[in-house]
Length: 65
Image 1 (tube, one colour):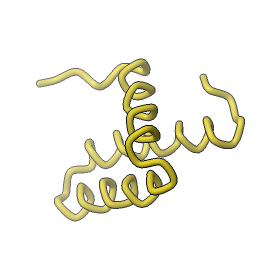
Image 2: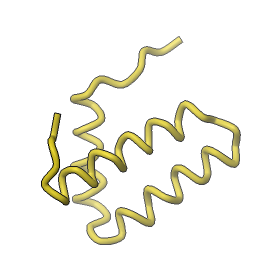
Image 3: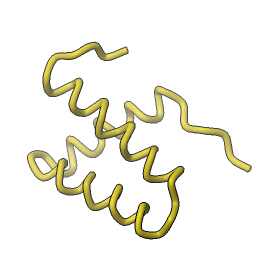
Image 4: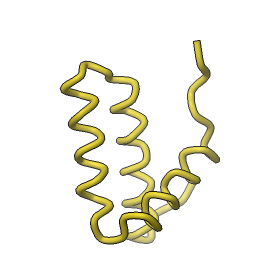
């Protein structure tokens, strides 16, 4: 069993998604979340939702912590 991702790992992924996908990041994240939900993998869908949440906070000036 693997441990849940750390906050640092989530933020690292946020920055990687933002750098690699730019304005298309939202579509990429929606595809990731939807794909894992269709596959029945709630844990991985939750991980990508966490990334989406932090990207939203980063882009809209909300609290980063």
